[in-house]
Image 1 (cartoon, rainbow, N blue to C red):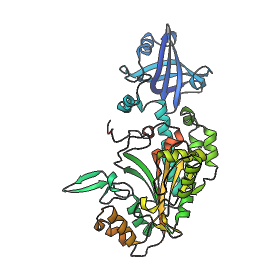
Image 2 (image 1 turned 30 degrees about the vertical axis):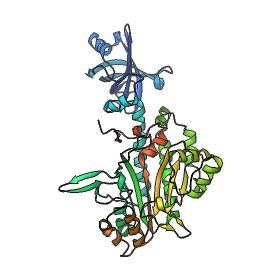
Image 3 (image 1 turned 45 degrees about the vertical axis):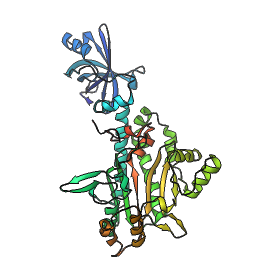
Image 4 (image 1 turned 120 degrees about the vertical axis):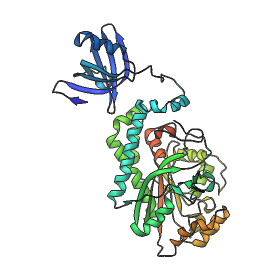
Length: 423
C-alpha cells in the first residue's frame, strides 16, 4: 500500500473475496501485509471500471485508489472507499473452493500457497530462519556450508537417497555434521541452515523426505553445554516470533499467552530411563528399556510437561556410531533430544561426539558400513582432537509447533514425502 496524500492511498494486490449487489461491489483485497475490504460504488468511477469490478473474479490482480475509513464491521476494522479501479489481469475461475481435501490442496500447492493460512505460516517460517541466523551470529558463530552430495551415511543407511554421480554413486546429505566436525578444529563455533534428505518410509503427519535443518557444532563443549545452547536458541526464536508475528499467530489460532509462558520458562532435563519410568508408571504402558521412543511414547510422555523437555542418555545401542558412551553409565550415550509439547515430537537432537576411533569402527561394522569411507573422519581424532558437541534443529518441526499446524507438510512451501514429489 502507498499513500498518495493524507486522505488517499494506492493499493495493489489480488481479489481475495468479491460480491456485488446492484450498484455496489464489495471486494476484499489481499497483499503480503494482510487483507482489506474495498467498497466500489457505481457513481464513484467510470461505467467501464465499475463493470470490470463486477466481473473480476477471485485472484484477479488489481490496482485501487481511494480513501481508508474506519469500519468495525469490515475485516481488519477498516474499509477502502474506491475512487479508481484498474484490473491488471482478469483471473479465470479459481479451482480452489471451500471444503476441498488435503490431497487436492497439495496437488494445487502452487495456488494454495496464496491462502491466508500458508501466507502466515511462511511469514513465521521467515522469522524463525532469521532468528536462527541472528542467534548464532550474535554469539560469535561462523556460518559454514557442507556438501549436499556426500559419500557417507551419518543417520542410518536405510534412509539414504542414492544419486548417480557421473559413473559412481553418492548420496544426498542426511546431515551437515561430519563435515562440521572437521571445521570446528579451525573455526571452533559454527552453524548452518540447509536442506536435509531422509528416505524414511513414513506417511505420518510429522515426517518429510526433504526438510531444512539448523545445525551447530562447537569445540570445547560437552553435552551439558550444548543442551543449554539448544534451550537458549529455542527461547530466542519463540521471542522473535512473538515480537514480529502476532497477527499471523492469531490467524493460525495459536495460544500466544502459552508461547510467551514457554519462552520464559525453564525446560526440564530427564534421562531416557526416567522417561521410561513415567510412561510405565503414570501412563500404564509397558515400554521395555532399550527401545527407541516412538511417536506414541513421546506424546504420552508430554502429558506430564507443559514446556519442551530434554531427554538425555538414550541406550547407546540404538544411537548413531559417533555418540559416545557415558562413562558414568556405559549402557547409555552422551546424547539428547528435545521434545515439544502437544504431540509435535522431537524438535532438536544432538550429542557430544566420540573420540574413540575403535569404538566408532566397531559400530560402523555392525551396520555393514565400509570403514574406508570414514578414514578422513577418523583423521580428525588423530591430529589435535578436543571435546566437541553439536545438534540439529528441525525447522519444519519447530514451525509446525509454533504455528499450531496439524500436519508438517504445511510448514514448508512445497513438501516432499514418500508419496509426493510434485508440484
